Image 1 (cartoon, helix red, strand yellow):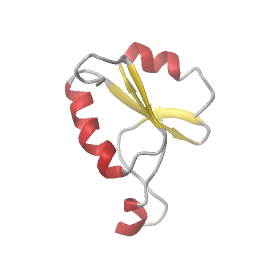
Image 2 (cartoon, helix red, strand yellow):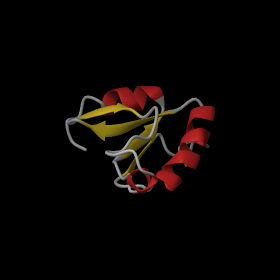
Image 3 (tube, one colour):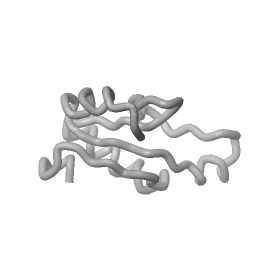
Image 4 (tube, helix red, strand yellow):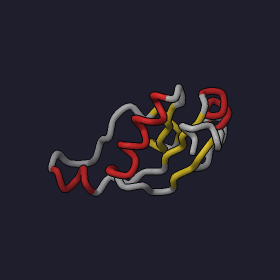
Length: 82
């Protein structure tokens, strides 16, 4: 919905990696971006990382994600809540 312009900002509380990865490609192609909650702050979602090096650890990836236009993500980064 963000990529096609119907929403300016969307919060995904705990998406699975396979749900977020495909959507992230569309969001970035539309000129939007994504943030994820890491270390008590919203940070750009540039890659998927997990504790451990196994495929199972990566498959278990679940982090809050915000997607939206750059100006909306900038405003969201000022909010200290996940």
